[in-house]
Length: 137
Image 1: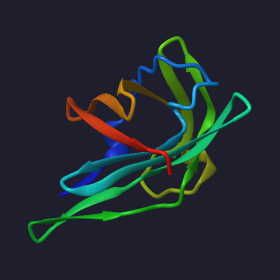
Image 2: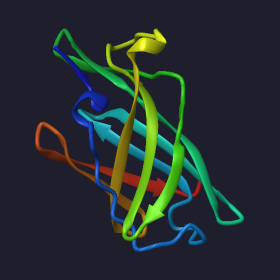
Image 3: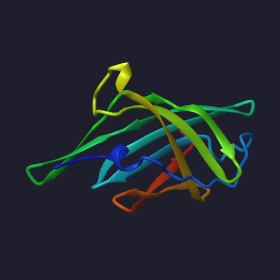
Image 4: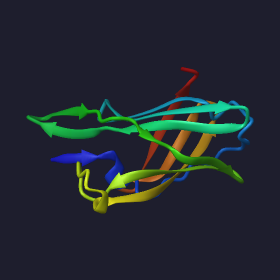
């Protein structure tokens, strides 16, 4: 059985009571699933402009144990604050692992801020919420 965090995260909500000049969004955001890394997102803020990247880990169940395989970081496209939301797009392959440009599409993601260092992707994995924890590095 394979689980890809991104497969269930087609549209994620991140509510953030912040603006681009608020450093609360800047930092390293991590989520785990089955005690394995699932998402690693780095958000930077420089003079009011947001940037960063994200890694979606492929989770595999092998011989009764979960294992995570990382990928290359994917650049956040047009990361921004819209009202109470941190919103960004990423280029994502329609077919897992495909590098064919015809298989690429933009997907939009949103994360709800549940506290100073907590974010939540609502209904992310089979209707379950996925919590991210933020650190400064």
